[in-house]
Amino acid sequence: MNAIKNITIGHTERLYKPVGYTMLANLVNIIPFCLSIEAVRIIFAAFDGSGRPLDTARLWCIFGILAVYMLVMALAERASYRANFRGA
Image (cartoon, rainbow, N blue to C red; front, side):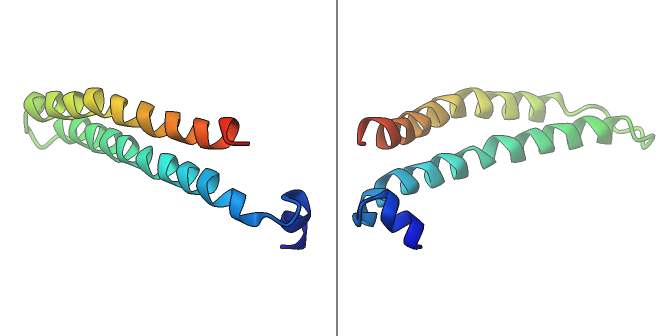
């Protein structure tokens, strides 16, 4: 902790906003990862030998969610970037 205090010249409160926005951006990026895992699971379920057809409606739904979610990711990354590099 002493190293962080030395780096910030005793003003550790300056790290609250950049660290908070970076954590938020990283948490936002977990959702697309989970959705891609679900898409892979749907594809593998269709080819596991059970005879179930490929659920294309669900895949298109996941695609739509991911496409819209790109805007959310961009906004979160933009806020994180501004807090880290413009607020210094």
